Length: 431
Image 1 (cartoon, rainbow, N blue to C red):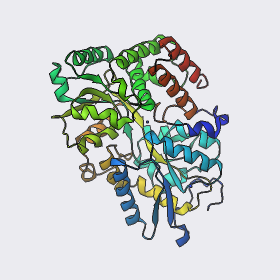
Image 2 (cartoon, one colour):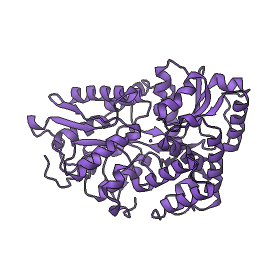
Image 3 (cartoon, one colour):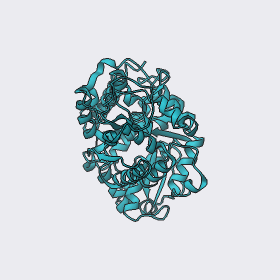
């Protein structure tokens, strides 16, 4: 993770998109409670509705069972991809008024807060909780910064998933069981959907546009080329990125423009209702289909974005231990619960994500429905890459600029040439 973003400051963090210890770094320390006054844990998340809220409630139940006498204080803040929560959190951290723990996206998103000295190294907790044996190496590598770890993941999500309505595909003469092999074939299928009188694809507000674009980049560049965008090995001004922009532009032309200021749920609704064919969204979308009592593969199908089969575009929700956490022992108890087998099963079986742990028993794994079974199998064997839209691949200032460039393009305020120039500018400090 680059250290070139120290000067980006809290202002950029507040724009990100997908509240008493000694104040020093402890390396984890003991998770034993310090007394009754420390048994209240204030937790900031953006899990305030739907399956996320239900998953959090299940997690809290496990927390209270595992930690008798502790009180969970829900400081959830609503907002798409956590934008509202992050704005308030940025102000609180700058004012040295941190919560006991807060949700973030694992990976480069945390770089500013690490550089600013807001976070404690929790490597000691990984040893205490034996997480280095429980989490796969591919995950540990993405959590480690200069030999230290600053957060504990509650789950793993997949970005590169297409959700498709079976009836709409069949009306267009397409076979839902045989998804297209690459982006060109996918666009051809979208044209067939359009000819059949239905909306080919939906996309929502700015962060969902970045979510779509990152997976077109992944499809056109391949896993190695995509990952090279973040270490200087792949040129943002190259032909591969130009090809992805051209594909992205064609797909946006086929999208329902009326939804492009909406969050992901309204954009997914036409897929669920049989009014549109495709939407690219993370696997939290599973809960929307479950909530509408839709079943796969009868009502909908899911598959890797065409051209990305064999690649798992990774992101994870992760919790921190801030410097100056008011109730540090309680925060450590929370981190222990969210990383425990019981916590991971309770939360992820509801949310649609998969456990970060790779050591669950057959009985525990059996609690997950088919999508998560498929995702767990893929994570174990696929090539893992990191999401841009959800904080894993690049620091917040970079993803913010990419997001702004795509929003400008989506509004017709720039063309493909200008978009690529904007992307080059946004990523110039990655190398």
